[in-house]
Amino acid sequence: MKNKEIKVELDLNVTKELEAEGFAREISRKIQALRKTSGLERRNVIELFINGDEQIENMLKTQLEFIKNRTGAEILLLGKKEIERYKNKERFSIRGKEVLIGFNKKR
Image (cartoon, rainbow, N blue to C red; front, side, top):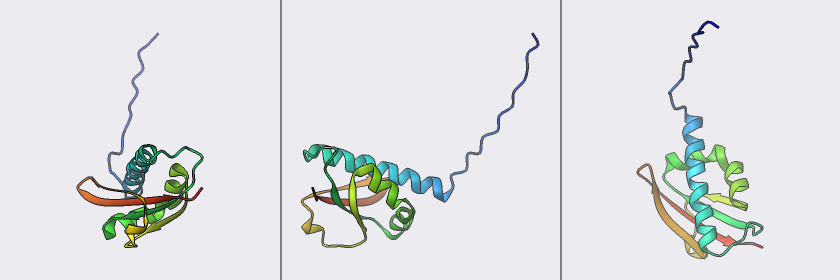
C-alpha cells in the first residue's frame, strides 16, 4: 500500500458568532453551578437576569434561546434591572469582563 498524503487547513480566526457562543457557554456553566449550589433540580424553571457591559449584552442577544435552553430559564432579562429582587446572584469575570447573574426559582 502506498502512503497517501492528506492536507488539512484550519481556519483559526474567531468570528463574532464563535465568540458570542463561547461567552454564552461560559455564562451557562456559571449559571448551572449556581443553580446546583442553590439546591435547584434540573426540572426547576428559573427567571434569569444577566448584566454585563454593552459589548457582552450585544453578543448575548444572539444567544438568548441557547442560554434559556441550557439553564432552564423561562424568562431571561439582559441589562440593568433591580438585582436586589433576585435571591440567587453571583458576580464573576469572563475574559476580563465583569458579568453579574441573578435568578429566582419560578417552579
